[in-house]
Structures are given as structure tokens and as C-alpha cells.
Image (cartoon, rainbow, N blue to C red):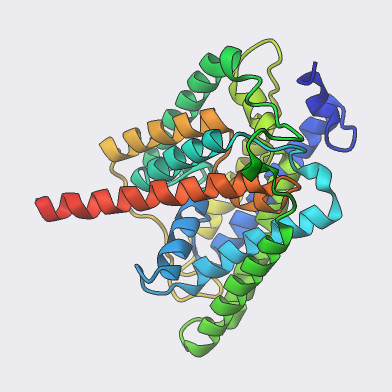
Length: 343
């Protein structure tokens, strides 16, 4: 069946090579996040970057050029990978409703729970944060439960179609949008940094390099393909363990490097550390984790792959997912503001 062909999908990969690519992609993600921490002093949290890039673009938050540059780099990195080999991406589109609903849940959940697979997973676990461990256990177990339960009824909807039924998902080749938007955000961020004395343009260039590296790692690992994610999250006789090697590869780098870097007085290019300080394992982290897990289990997409995947041959599905993610995130922020006012 089509499921067995997943391993042969990227340039005729067999199973062992798929595991190798997953681990290699994970190591690249680890190196990218470690380099970003050492140079800039920040954790690589893609849901936070996406949210903050959006809030700055809509004048809801004060400018933070590094987030804009990192966001731009993810889009550019996806486009670079698309030009090297389209096979990194899914060779088909998905149902619009499926993608928007998945994005909505992930956007709301990651904003409520303050993080996704990168911020809580790759970076939080490397910092030995109990809060992140609680978040990861929550969203991961939820995603596995949802994907495994829905597998019998959803497996056909989870197969990408070369001719999606709804016309929106049929729009092809958005990699020029990825390049255009990516370069615009990056240039704007770098110009903003050049104007501000406190932040060096060099820091912006490093952020760009890290984000492009991160995008490449996501493509090489297989994370940008929802079929790959679903075949890992859904426990059944076709189970594909390779994505465990992505987290393993990334954490192998980070758990070795981060304790050493965190002992430094400050990061190399910036004046101080900018690292999450909250340790509370509260209801927000758990409920946010559950909502994120449901969304991830339903759609097979989380924020990094969603943004990078826009450059793929069927990027419209990912763009719709990102649209849902923004709506979910914005709704959560409005809910939080409303809650504060009522108190």
C-alpha cells in the first residue's frame, strides 16, 4: 500500500536511510538551536517566533527584529530546500478544513501553553525544565492518542492528493511567496537592527543563518511531511519510528552543549540571556499541551514545518494551516486580555 512507500518517497529512500536522514535532520536542528543560544542567548521557539512576527506586523507588539529575521529565514530556508529537491516535501495537498482546524488548535494550544515541539521539546528538555517536560509529555501523549484513534477513519484523508478535491488546495507552487515574504521580513529586521545601536547587525545575520539551518533540518528529518508525522504518531502495524530519531539527534547535541553554554556570563553577541524563566506547571501548560496535541495529531503539522512547508509543491495546504494557526493564536491572546480585564 501507499504507506509502505513512504520510505521510498524521498528520492527512493529505504528504511535504514530514512532513519539516518531523521537523525541527521535532528542533529542539524540541535546545532542550529545551540548556535542560536550561544550567540544570541535565546531559545529557539518557533510558535513564539511566528506569533511575535505576526504581532509586530499588525502593530500589536513593540518591534523585535530578531523574531522577524528568524521568521523570514524559515521561509527562505524552505524555498532553498525546495529548489534543491522537491522530494523533501509532500507530493500532494490536503483538505482545507482539516488543515485550518488543525492549525487553529495548534495556534491556540501553543499560545496558551507557551511553546511547541521546538521551544518545549528541543530546547526545554535540554535545559532540564520540568515545565517543558510536563508540556512535552502532555502534547506528545495526546497527539499519539488522537492519531492512533483516528487512524482507521482518517487514513484516507491523511493521504496527500495530487488533485485535492477543494480548489483552494490545488493552488501550486508558493515558493516565490516564501522567498518574497521571507526576504521582506529579513531585510526589514536587519535594517531595524542597523538603526538601533544596541543590537548588532551581526546578531541578525546569525539569527538568519540559524533559521535557514533550522528549516533545512526540518526538511531533511522528514518533519515537513504530515504523512511521515502521522506514520509516527499513529501506533499500528505500519508504525514508523524514525521521527523519534529527530528528537534524539537534536537532544544529543543540546543536552551536551547547553549546560556548558548556560554557565557563561552572557551570550557571545548580546548583552544578556533572554531565556524563559517561568517554572510553573499550571493549568495553562497542560490544557495548552492537550489542545496542541489534538491539533498536531489531527493535521500532522506543528509551527516550524507549517512555515517551512509553504515552499513545497503543494504549499497551499501549509499556508492554510498557518492561517488557522494565526487565528487560533490571536483568539487565545484576545481571550487572555479579556480575562485580565474581568479580574
